[in-house]
Image (cartoon, rainbow, N blue to C red; front, side):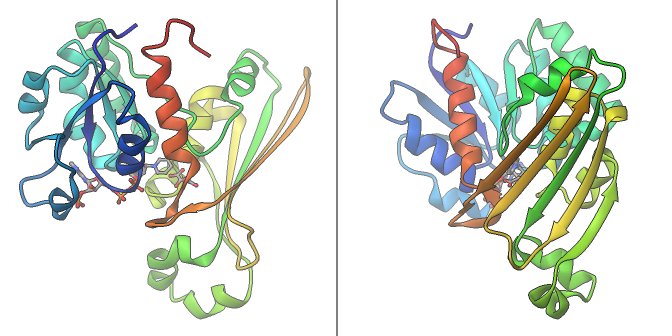
Length: 264
Ligand SMILES: NC(=O)C1=CN([C@@H]2O[C@H](COP(=O)(O)OP(=O)(O)OC[C@H]3O[C@@H](n4cnc5c(N)ncnc54)[C@H](OP(=O)(O)O)[C@@H]3O)[C@@H](O)[C@H]2O)C=CC1
Ligand SMILES: O=C([O-])CC(=O)C(=O)O
């Protein structure tokens, strides 16, 4: 369990702003790592220490580092943080699709005596899914269904913007690894589920749906132990339609758990 409530944030966008707003008056202090030329620097509130390198962040003395920047930042920063003795909570779990990176992170955590803690993020039920990892015949199907504006750049690149406004489009069906690489800002959840249940037990579907009530995540599980259907209809964040507003609340809860005497 971490003691001093010092949180190092990597990135300061939609999720980080919300985490800071939620925890700011609970005795936590924050430092934030942003690139020297980052437009996000202008939006960092007074009282947050702003740094430009991992070494500066480590010198500030975080008890926990929370990555809320994107998949590239995981590889750029987290191995050094873990090896330096600080545990990490990454939002961009899709980066863990890369087995070499996963091995580097594991080695760094062993070296530093630390942990990479995978948060549930925009979904829930990871405890149930992790229990199925022990069950040979388990199969899980995950569907990420969001309105077209959550896939806007991707639909434009495919020339599907107009069609997507009228009709449902199946964008992808396959593995969590490939999904996380194709849609790095939307399919972190797929990789999170794969880490819980096992890649070989999971199939992933991605749908653009003009009738979607929100950022919808459906998880259907079948095994010798029974069946489960989990359905999450999340409001998008006001400042990023790809990111469910739930994600910051989930990361906040995950941060609190690292400091609470009774962790739920
Ligand atoms: N696990 C889950 O359930 C979910 C995970 N996510 C992940 O969380 C990430 C953040 O989401 P969100 O807050 O909405 O995104 P935003 O785009 O709103 O914010 C991203 C922030 O990270 C900064 N940033 C980007 N790259 C780097 C880098 N290499 N080093 C340091 N800072 C960087 C950006 O700064 P700049 O101004 O310089 O670009 C910006 O401040 C998503 O990209 C996604 O990977 C999102 C939703 C759900
Ligand atoms: O916030 C969401 O709905 C999920 C998301 O973007 C992701 O998994 O990357």
